[in-house]
Length: 84
View: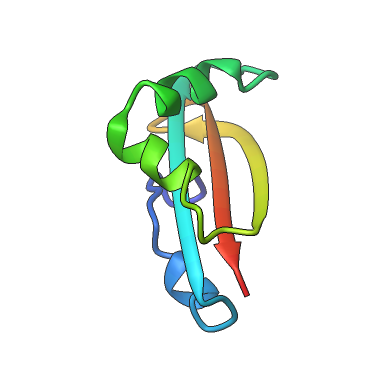
């Protein structure tokens, strides 16, 4: 959010430590504490759901950041799955 951009760039660093890595990202205007909206969006998207249900993954982690994106308040949720 510091650079008004977001994406999967940090995944390339994660691949050095993990054999399997998947990531889904959700963006929403405004500040939102809870991530149910993000999970619903991922669950309703075949591509994102495929990442979440990858049978090779053994670990999962999620995080949220809130700040300003394009001058407006924004919330970004990220969920990663992987296997060492």
